[in-house]
Image (tube, rainbow, N blue to C red):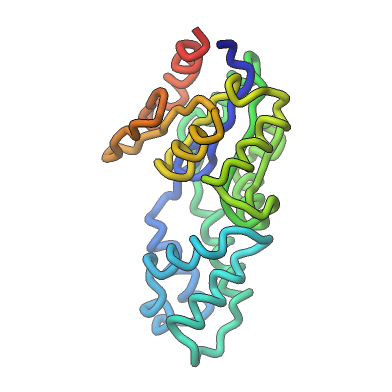
Length: 226
């Protein structure tokens, strides 16, 4: 097997927030709707709505669903909530140590793409804030495709853009379902990124701790290529 291309996830792979996502959500909702609304929209509610509204340009649909389910009487604009959350999230995101240099190093040996789940505006904002807009050979945001990971079609689009067959492409991501199972089902090699308390998924071909990503990923890919 000759490895010709590498795809990378964004959230919790190349970048992590500087505080909990629950805190980011609360700060964003409070900034628009006050403490009462922030108390009623918790992270578990957001995650459930997000799973049903992953495609599109913004998170407005997510907050429409949240307001309908959690605070139907609230006189709050879901678009304003979506904007506040996008801005708070982008501002809190920090690159994993050595992430930019890692992508530069990988591009010396492979075609390299970014494949990330989420609404277009939100994910493009993150990419811009992180200074990664021009760092890849291709950037695919699933909100622009109309189907999120683990659907195999985003992975197929990644391989087309990178001009490589799935069997020649490795995907690097943290989510057991979206990244590991999705990429494996699409026929790609999979490197699972593990947080400190995460366990390897049996369908991954290799693993790397997020804290060691920049140091160890090139060698892991070389081993797969061998």
